[in-house]
Amino acid sequence: MSEPDIDSEEMVLRPKRVTRQQLEEFVQKHRHPDESPYFSLEEVAKHFKVSDSTVRKWVRSEHIPKDSYFLIGHTYRFDIDKVTKHLFNNDEQT
Image 1 (cartoon, rainbow, N blue to C red):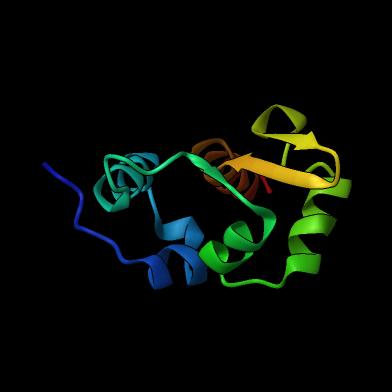
Image 2 (cartoon, rainbow, N blue to C red):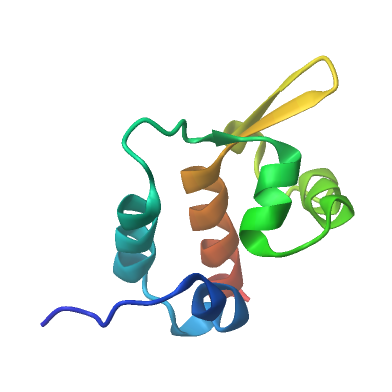
């Protein structure tokens, strides 16, 4: 049986109710085929509806693991799939 569709607000506000399958389907469904999986820090903040400083805090505290982003000079590029999966995995473990 298929899980019901979710929206981005539910994913952010009620992450414990979102299954891994729903998360993966949401990411695939909402990505434009030509869109890069790499987001800027500001785009990550907008995606999760948090401030830029919250994303920086997640990086410093390693809630976003080092294999989920790369840094060129002072510019971050985040693999949004890895970031999303890790944040939701982290939430499930607590």
